Image (cartoon, rainbow, N blue to C red; front, side, top):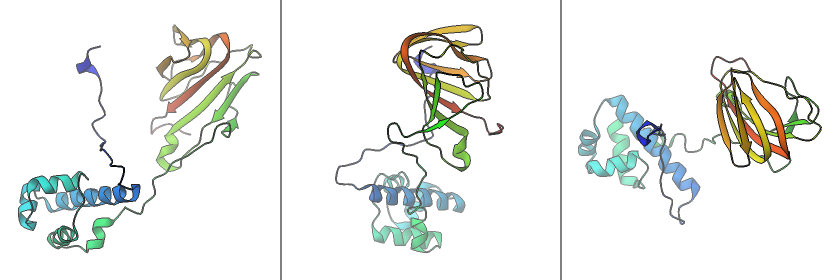
Length: 216
């Protein structure tokens, strides 16, 4: 595969943070940026036209919309006036907490999956609600008691990262010899699972992304 064929993440943003900047300050700048972009789009005007209307440069407005600069109170007042909204509406969303799930080592929830056998341990590494339920993150441990190797099938895509040990992992008609540091990304609808346990203990991360149509 050539570099041109690689899929790049172009939907998000990245920025450098100076050590003096707080997370709260960055969240406020991001909220202002999102609200200015949304309001400008609703008014159907270009960056250049809006910048000219409020008396700042096009480059400055572009930086504001991309959260690359702090916005002065005077500029906020001009933006609010141009959009005919209260200044406070430009801060909307800054106080919203985005969901996250932190699980200290060894404190994940032990769960039983369909096909679970002796010597197979599944630890759920946190969960989020609503649309984020489409992601399942598991820490799987296999030990010497594992005599039966179940095969799983499920909708969506699964990513496997081997942390420790060595095993042969089957997917459809293929078998992959995996050692610590190896990873495997598969179509979950083909039968898959460990087919040979070689070096114990075996521990791997399993991350499953379910499609919207899946019933969870």
